[in-house]
Image (cartoon, rainbow, N blue to C red; front, side, top):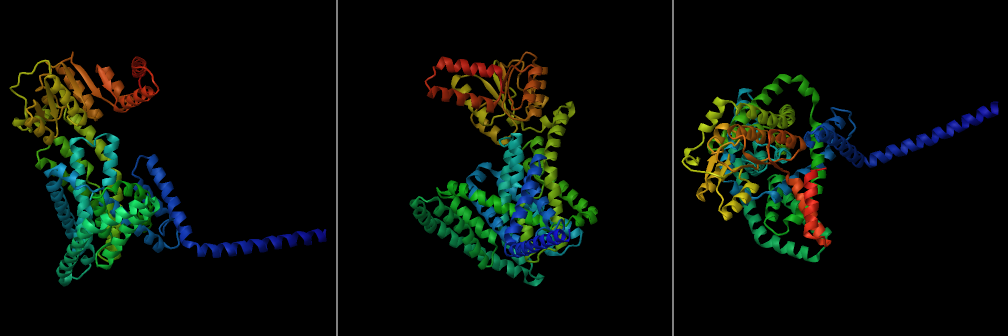
Length: 594
């Protein structure tokens, strides 16, 4: 037994020795591969956080932030060197600004008109003033108060676009106004980035430093203009001529990082150079391929950026400063909502556009995070203000989808009341009205977006009479210039519909995608003319079922109809006759979406 015991003891010692050697070697390996290990941990945390946020139908950015909190120094402390992660995250900032420059469209901004350019500038300036007032009330230093205004002036392009796409409202009046304002906000990031490094100067040296920074920026932009007109096209033609995707990607990537490095050494921000590089590339024929190659890299490094921000967020700060955070969040939501709502009102838009614009743009945007990180790095803001900004940003982003949903329900209910409906209808310009027109057997088109414009074109060619109702003043001005009968207002408003001669109309066509507004329009139209023939656009089964019960004759689903057209063209390639194809399409249409 003693021999067996000695043998067992010997085996345990050998195993323990190998385990110790393995652990010692593993520890050395982990030290050597520390950055790689930290990188893997951060990416896994961001993946898990983003997936959970996606499941909860929240912006994935919030998931990245929470993932960063979890593995950071205020969470489970799984990441040993935050500095190295922040270095990689800087590349994410550069790529974010680089792709913003490539995606930025001056043409689109011009098409938005005065409400985008003048209204966007007014919104940014007014919100900066609001932030400065809040900072002054809390006795913050001058630089922090000004910079707080910068941060809250920006909304989230990424989040607002995603919500508008999901709601099918990109082409709505409030959707176009919001996109125009967001474009101006994105452009405003550039001068803000120029100002950041000089805000840390003392009071006496602030103005001279600001003047020097602006002068450097002007010189830099002039040099970049020359580069963009003559040098860059020549380089890109030579690189593209090699027909190597790898070399093209290296050239694009090198352009963005290279100009960012040049601006940094020029005494300006990295982000400014990256944005200008993207803007130069946006005017070339290579921009679409460049975006296709760079966007995946941008998304990975941007994920690192948002996760690294999360690592710096202290949950204990929120718990210890609930009162202050609540006051700041309320001030941002109320103040910014009012400012953003007033912009479309000043340019003649309706109460509905005002309400939705205010509800959709009150959040703090992702580029505010970029500015905040840059300001913290140069000592413009304190750590406490940084924590306050990030906490407030997360809360406002979380509330945005719910605010827009609440705005839909609230407007849908209030606008149907007799007094409110009459008041909203009274705000329309009499010059935009169809009063005095003797319409009979006409088509009433509610919403003159892409679908409505095509229908108007066909009706005009065939000589059929029609009337347009739209809530966008720009659309109404266009119709009026062409001599088309029109009414400016919300088609779901019973007072507006009462002016459309529905008792004499042949058909009512609803082209906009707003389930609540569509249902209200149908109900109010049928009260005026119970026998009215209605064609409506729908997207979901629940919407279709509700409208069928109300008595809508035809329901059109854009995605389903697009699928039928694809089937038609595909079968035609196989030699199937037109009669057979039509039979198949009719059968599928009767069966409905599967």
